[in-house]
Length: 151
Image (cartoon, rainbow, N blue to C red; front, top):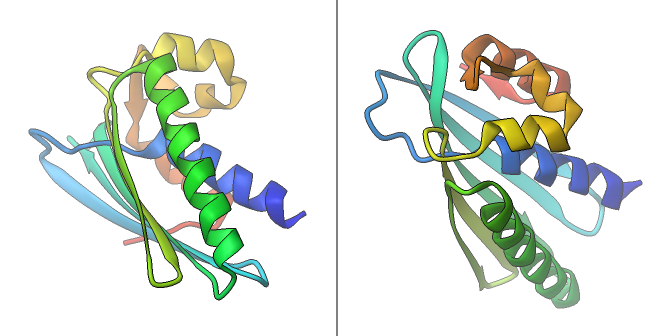
């Protein structure tokens, strides 16, 4: 159950992260999840023009006193983001481990990501992709459904 929740959060984050070039406005969002043996904190900055999301930046921090969990999560995050970058393009990421934490900084430029392929591969992407663009309303609704709080 915990791995399923973590996987869901990571998959969601993968599709929701970006870089923010030429953005008019920024909506900041956050979710903290305590999964028993580790915690996951995700911070999002949604860069948009009022209707469409141009990019999202995400910082995810996994904390644990169990070094094997940190090692496992670092490996998982690194391979996951590399696969997404190879599959959809537009991703830049960095995964680091330090002092009982693994931190991923991920950016996706929605002007470069292959949204058509994303929608083909993941039906749920239809909730936020319209006319080959990511809608702000779709992101807000998706975040709300996942328990992500935005200001």
